[in-house]
Length: 265
Image 1: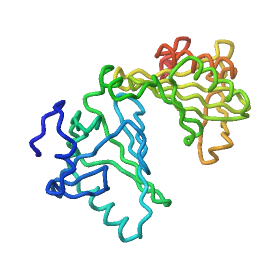
Image 2: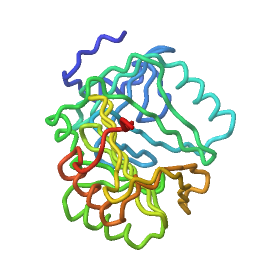
Image 3: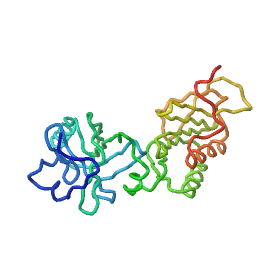
Image 4: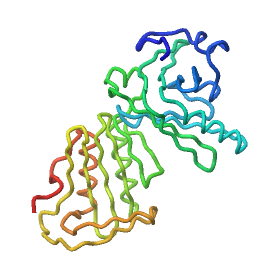
């Protein structure tokens, strides 16, 4: 392992020096050995690089490389060989390591040449680190698996809910800073809401107090034709009630008026 110390600042010039390792991705990922590298996260925008802190537990790093298939394959192999990744945050010409990920690095390559690295934050980022990174949002809401929106205030929440009201069907996946999640799926049958907190092993689902019907219906999300979603009618609630649960989750965390899953019956 490299002789770095967590939370200690290192001059960026020292890290960028040509004598120290070799670049896997110029300006972003530098190989220290065939199995170890550093990644430099700059909270400000970079060309062809996008950093998403979905929650305190996960960071996604997207970068594009318009290179030949052979060069992409070489890059793919070099990333796949990494067993340890030092996560540096760069500010004002100083690089500070905040985590070392000691496991195979998870990443994907899509046909357009975009690489996406999924970097787990273990232990989760503290509120002080969250603000230090300049993240600023309290949650992330992703519409139909493609349109991600940062939630910074109640006005962002109201704007999101207003846009959802105009859709005949949709699926929203929301993640709070703490890492708990809420899914809202809506079609002509109504709204299904599921809540999950892995750390506390809590799973909840929506319930219609006026219905005991267990008959299954198949929900259809127009933007996600391959999504196979069956639900008992008693778990479907009106759209506005589903949006109320989404609003409550984004503002306060675990929503009320939901039931533990699976149900006792």
